[in-house]
Image 1: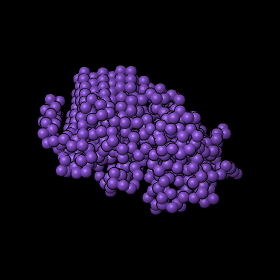
Image 2: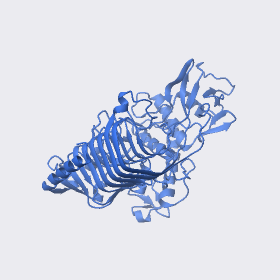
Image 3: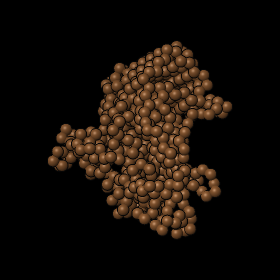
Image 4: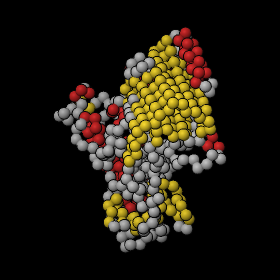
Length: 531
């Protein structure tokens, strides 16, 4: 079914069969998906109250109204006088003692599905999509309506797609956390007839999908990509307008790192591993997070400098459409076609499609990684936090005196350091994600008389108060400075209307790309001579 007409005929017959089998509401379908498979399933706003719709059987999913995704919204708020209220109309601030915080919450039949063994890791960083297609033969009919993130959820859940074509957003062993050992991808999927609006990441995202038709769609106000398909084959995109990625992004990527640090901190508290220093640091981070929400959502106060995004543009590289080999699209371009990786996608057709007004201000975030004496390159990779965010030594957490970097910290880096100390004391606890902040860095953060010294090329050396470069164990500690990455150490790339990498066989017909704009500062020399 590689041609458009063959696909259209196939999905038309499928839709006719589902219509003949009858119509049910989402509540009926989700209660017994096997019995109600291959029917038309009507979806309304109330169906999203508790989280992502997991579509585990073939059906025709049909919207009956426009959707603004905002699950597990708090039920308690503070009013203008600082008193707790359950009336959202009177809300002027977040209640710091709220029970719900937009994350999946254990307890109750509606929430248990997100903690089932096969997907519990997938939802470990929040509701990553409004609709997750986990079956073969699913048709999503937007029915002329709009599916989008509510402004509150968009701010609080910085990793998200309107429609995910799998039960999790990453293939096994990739991503900022452990998302699961088995990927259940959707195949034979059609999404059509409507609009995908505001999203903190993607409109449509998928891995290893086959036989996909995207038709008659408008996708806009996303931050990263309108359509992102990795390792997918036999894909047709027809009459799709991808335009105007969000140019009012409320925060920098540091806010995402802070939200995820808060989530992992909750696991530390649940495990009984917290201590007064950690509790104090987490309290200050929560204050900055809540103040950001109050400012962005209620126009109450200002966003803390750590999270401010004055340009309103995403501080990473966005795309209109990205077709990529299997796995994440965060690395550099493939250097050659003489590998299996260069042929992991194929049979791609894009017709009557427009990509327009994609803008970004790419922000290079300089990273560090542990060096080994006498060995070229990094010893243990880039230093990152629990969800893979770079420890930003050169961006706000250091007081600079010439070539010396003394730790001064932010509410985010203080929690990152406290989590690292707890991990070092409890190395077998499986609750710290990708955290790789080592002991010397925690010593640097806790001692004002220690500093990291930049020697003029791409090395940082940890120094003591007496100017020596050895810790008490007699070990010299050095870090390699690495550039050309963003806040997650994704390889920085220019803004692209359409990116196709690793594809074997594709056709463009009547495709236009206009008004692609990239801005940003010149690269740093801290990692060596900038090229």
